[in-house]
Amino acid sequence: MGNVHVLDHPLIQHKLTFIRDVSTGTKEFRELVNEVATLMAFEITRHLPLQEVTVETPVGPAQSHTLAGKKLGIVPILRAGLGMSDGVLNLIPAAKVGHIGLYRDPETLQPVEYYAKLPSDIEEREFIVVDPMLATGGSAVEAIQSLKKRGANQIKLMCLIAAPEGVEAVQEAHPDIDIYLAALDEKLNEKGYIIPGLGDAGDRLFGTK
Ligand code: URA
Image 1 (cartoon, rainbow, N blue to C red):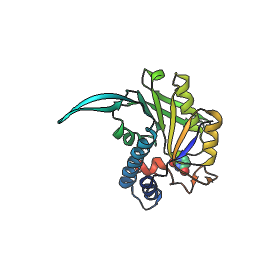
Image 2: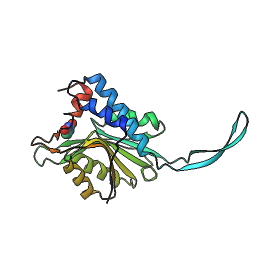
Image 3: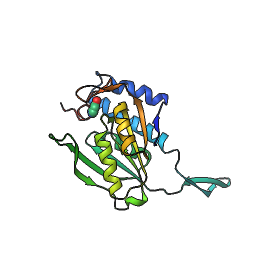
Image 4: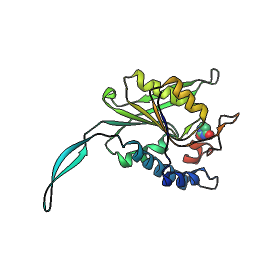
């Protein structure tokens, strides 16, 4: 079973408080989501392999390390996931970025893919799927499925806030996936919003209603 990691770094928790705050406006909300995505990316890239290199300092050779060149991919789920992708790119600028768009079929209420554009060397990359809110889990389950069916075999899921229902849905459908969160909240309400959550992440990021 994939693990759920709640990233309790003080800076992440501090910034998340202002992201939740209803009085935080669009500009600040977007900046904070970007910053928290960077901080979360810092935590979840701890496992990246290193290689030993020799570097010439002004006073002589030093044995040191560089990243061993693992290929990474970031996959924001449209649209709110876009708010987190630049934050991850701040730390891993060489990562490729794929996009997956999903809408909810009004009759079946199931997510349906309307857009997918992904890097060509999918099998070789480790992907970080990003979406601020893991609510019912439907979109994340479908996006991960979409990556797997195209050959991805190393996937992590990174969200700001999750409801227990969403975590369970992902764990049931994709027990191999590790989930990284800034907070695990209490529940979903009858409209599918995370309680206490932060409201509609897409609307708050893009200033829509
Ligand atoms: N999507 C959001 O943007 N917010 C929620 O609370 C749930 C899903």
